Image 1 (cartoon, one colour):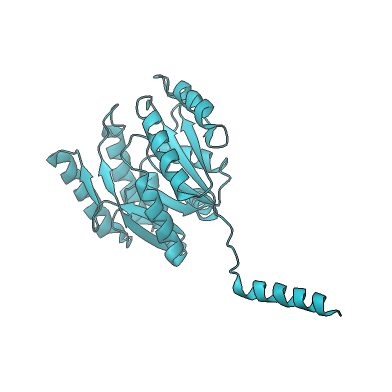
Image 2: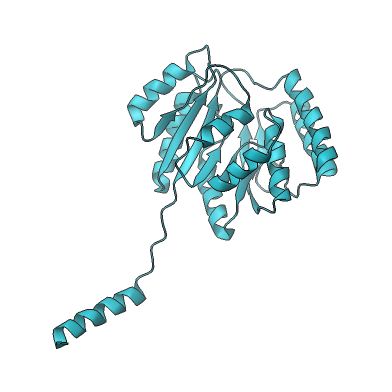
Length: 261
């Protein structure tokens, strides 16, 4: 072996010892179910693109519109032309089939190894995604959920009655289900994709109770859960989807989970 070749091999060995191994860059699939969000959609997409681009992580935004009659899908198509098909993925459905089934539908098309679920009505600010990603990395959590009830978390824009109902519902779930999570009904979360697939396959609820059951099933399966304080802001445009039927669903779901878990 020549001296020159020996020196080159020495340099390669030295570089392999001193240069850190680059971890694979995770990709994040953001699931955005929509129904009559034509006014909010352009704003939330702009915010998502801004914050995800600054994060440096590969991502895609999957819009799952449930046959909105207000032109939400047409707005999504225009946004796709602006930002590109790689960033904005459209997976619409013909009619309103429920929040839980929207996530199940969306995750089938997700190409990221992490999935973020959030509302499209500007209640969830994308700026918290960076904190959720950092939290997940800190302890390799299977799930990271946003919480309104710990630390700097809070709710803004609700009247006293609605805050009281929300607090009361959360307190009731804590007493009956003991989930060891401060905000069981929140819908701003980050999942490992395989964990989300496992949970959606084991969940029975398909409506608003879906979020609550996902955390309970995660605890049953011994998945690790981290929490990040978030600010929840009441919608500015459009009408809330929460009505009497959803409240009845919540009560029935709570009784069901209490009896079966």
